[in-house]
Length: 395
Image (cartoon, rainbow, N blue to C red):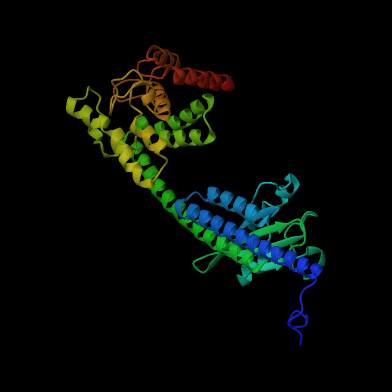
């Protein structure tokens, strides 16, 4: 009688057979452990990506982290997120690091029709190609490279809508495991929800900002002397920030802060704004409330706190004694210090109900005279260089 192993019942294994079985048992144990480790790694990364997505509304950061995570876990050469352009039907691609410059140029915006991506958009089901060299279907990749041999494409969906595709490329033929495809599908679903939430957030924020801009325009319409003032302050502030070596993001924030710095005056009566004589203490109190009121107006828009702070503190004096809080020096946020200088310069260089505009030369000298008192000396120097450069480009 034989056992399932083919050895007669009661017979002993030979030394070679025993050694083989021992090696086989060890190999199976290692394979099981490796499989558990890989699944554990995938689950850990899945949780990390899910936590990031649920806690962030910054779409670019979510996409970058997701693509990098996919590369690490599944050992992919490239990972690409393709989002469908509603107007053109093309796919706008976000690519993980490592793609050649030549291929990046081809892969920024590609047609979906007749490609693997288009098929996944149509069916909302994953599509796997284990070896492109043996692939004979009419569907193709929207761009190709000799480095690509295997590809997995899964739909990116949110609330029943297919927004795009998540594409993973391998440099060698690859047999895609069911758990790998499942992992990609889960990540794609999470990214889809994150994108939808981010787009909704951006649209709400833009709507709120359009209302705020309308308020700013309405404010300037009340006073012919301040028409264009906010836009000029915004442009000067961005130029000064660039002269001081601030980042593109900081330059954009100070531009927005400059555009909205006087939004708090929207509630100030015209007879105070347009008064040609000195203000009473009560009227001064109303005017001095506008930075705080402006900050409160902007807070619901969830703008960067640097923008709100720039509006809130743009009337603080570098040497102390300004308003609303009387803080001084480095305690005043830098963007507020920049707006303080350019706001004062434009006010001096513009007509007001109670006086005519001063000359540019006089305004620059006044900035220098008050440097270290009202104004940050570094900002004054940067403003002077910007004005000199602007003047030289005109002549």
